[in-house]
Structures are given as structure tokens and as C-alpha cells.
Image 1 (cartoon, rainbow, N blue to C red):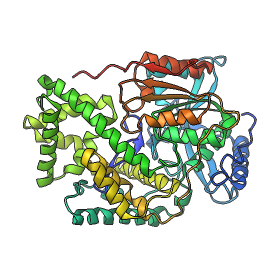
Image 2: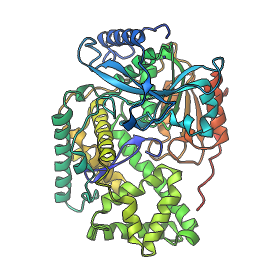
Image 3: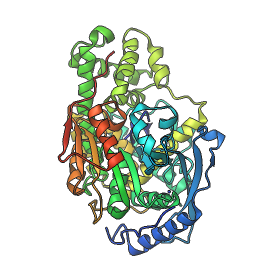
Image 4: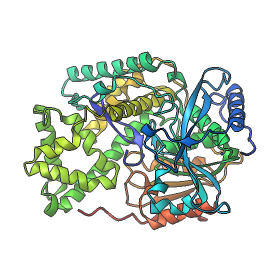
Length: 525
């Protein structure tokens, strides 16, 4: 999950520096409520059409930012799979061919980086940039990325004017009074209304099961008999849903940094659990900052580092830094450290400059670029999709008393992200389009072994999610990076993890038992 500041808050699950062949019939009854006979039939019709049409691969549009040899195209899918002859949208896809020989090739590997709301179109650049972690997989597979429905170049949705979305400073996410809470509730309700006004035609269909159906149609358009898939963060839930609906369509599936797929967790409780895990990882980072006080001079104990954080927030609340960086913006910036180990050093360095008297460095790192209209539109779109999918996938509490009680209690012991996360998700309390019942994730007949990879101290997707999916997907294998907490394990250099992922993708083989790996190297200043 990747989190972006909005409504005075923060939030999105995403990892990273935020096919000719026979068509196999979909599972018609994996979950009657979510994959009805009509939806299964609609998926089959769409997949058959896609297989015949294929994909018209061309050079990517210049403004997409992907140069040759990456190619781009579109796949047509129904808005509503129960009505396959009704309105259609186009899913944007891109690819780069495998780097090995024809004999080496094992098909296409599709990728989702998370969100909901993340674009996977950058996936082929892992080949063009010669990322060594993916070299062996790239020899065997075409790397295929896509924008899920509603994202980027796939009928993008919107909830608010992008320039308004990025405007700063926003309200302090931590309320001091009932008036503060009322102000945040008003913003959340207005945001939900804006989603309906700007994108209401697609909102009821912005669900994870529909995205999984889209994924199956893309598989068919690529000419692939079965799916090879790498899903990270929210992409693990997409993979879990796909594996439940289409178990016989899966060839290889790696899920990395796992969303808890329990119906009881999607999505309200999952976000509360996330607040607990973020506090844990925030505390890990404070210990590291304190241990490196000779470099950063922020505080030589975790308690002193926390005091500096509280002081910084108070200063920004009293007078936003540079007139634009308040507590909400600080939370959005600093949460990258609990998210990713790669952010530990640069976040601490920027903070260190502030403590030494250089306020501008912090402002430059955080302040929105109002001239970047394309980037701002992408940020707003990502946030809109995050909200639309999470609000549509499940029924959310409508009682403000419940939200207030749960988050007030949690904030007392886990203050870093709790209220920011609450405001991020509160539009779901007043969501006007239909909210579904989550799919009962389970391994259907024919699902091959799935490889699950998880850091033990992940903030965005707590470890228990990987354990839960492991129980539900029979025959799966779990690789645990013990003592580590970075989100998105497969993209980090750790031979114990990387070698096993390569072996699985290249041969389908897993260890006979679950594996515990030592953590990757701790960042050094």
C-alpha cells in the first residue's frame, strides 16, 4: 500500500517507489454472490472475443513515457460482466519480450504493484533498466504491465479537481476538538459526493473481482492458456481473488506483502490493523535514527527522536513551514520511512537538515508542485481508485460513533497514522453506490502452488495477512523475511528470497516446507 495525503489524511496500498491459446472456462460458482453464472458467462464471452481480437501492439504514445522496445496496446472489457454486450472500456497494457531465446520463453508475466490505484505499466522498464533482480525471470518471460480499470489510461476516474487535491496545507489529521472532527467528516462526505458526481457511471463496477475478470480477459488477449502473475501489496488481494475465481487458469503466482483476505478484514478492519503495524515500524525507524545520532543529530534515544517529531508537528501546526507544510504534509512525507527501508536514509537526512536550521530542505522535499498538472492528475486518480475500490468491495460502518470510538482508542497507543488513515477511508461511510460483500477467498480445485513472500514487520500489510492467505491457499509456500519490515520484498536484494522466487517462476518448484530468511541489509547512513 502506498499512502498519499488527502483530506488532511494519508492512504493507498502500493509497493515500489510509489497472450494465442485455448481458453479455459471460468469458475462459475466459486462464490455465488460475487461470481454469478451471468458474470462467469460474461467473462467467458469477453475472453473469447479478446482471444480472437488479440492486441494491436504499437509503439507507445509519446506522453506515456515508454520508449522502444516496449510496446503498448489496449484490451476491451465489459463495464459490467453480467452484461457483456453492454458498455465497454479499454484496459491499457504494455510489454517487452523475453530476453532469452524462443526456447527459453515461458509466456507472459503480468504484474500489479498495488493500490488499489497503482499503474503496472512501468513493469517492462525493469528489463530496459537491466535490474539484476529480475534478469533470470526476464530471460523466460515477456514482462507485461497494465493499468487496472479506472487507472491511468484505462478509463481513469476522478473525485476532485487534481489541483485542489494536491493543495496544501491540509487540516491536521489529529483532531483537537469535536469541531476538528466535524470539519474532517464534512471533507470526507464531500469527497464521496465528488466521486459520484465525476465518476458515478463506473463506481459500482470498481471492484476487485471485476479487476480480476479484466485480468483474465487480458490473459486471453495475450494468447496465454494460463496466467503467470506477480502481485505486490493490494496486488496480492487481486491475485487471491483471481485464484479463487479462476483456479484452473493459474500457472505461476507470486504474491508479495499480503493483504489479509479474510472477509472480516476487507477493508475497515484491515486499515485499523495497518495503524498498529505502522506504529511498530515507525518505532523501528526511530531506534535506527537514534543509533545513528552521530550522523543525524536528531536524538540519541528513540524517546528523544519522538520528542523531536512531536515538536516538529507542533511547529508546523502553529505556522506551516514555508506556508504550505503542515502536520498532514509531514505525515505524508515521514510515513515513507515505515513503508520502505530505502526511505530511511533520505528521510532522516532531510529531517537532520531541519533540526540543524535548514527549513527549506524539508519544504522542498514535501511541498506539492502545483505546476506539475500531469503528476497531480495521476495522484488524484490513484487516490480516487483507491477509494472507489475499497468502498465498493465491502460494506463499511455508517455509524460515526463506531469510527470515532475505534480510532480514538487506537490513537492513544498508535498515534503515528491512526487518524490520518481514518480520514482517508471515511468517504466509505457515506458512499452512495452499491457496496458488495467480499469474496470468500479460498483455493479452488486445480489451483497450483502459490508462492507467498512477506516481511515479518511490514507496516502496510501486516504479517498476519500472509499467514491467513497461506491457510486458505492449500499447497502454497510461505517465505518469511524475519526481522525485516520493508514493503515489497521481491524487489529488494536478498538472495534467500530472490533465488527462491526465480526458481519458482522458472521451474514451478518450491521448498518442501515454508522458509524463513534472514533480513536484507539494514540501511547505512
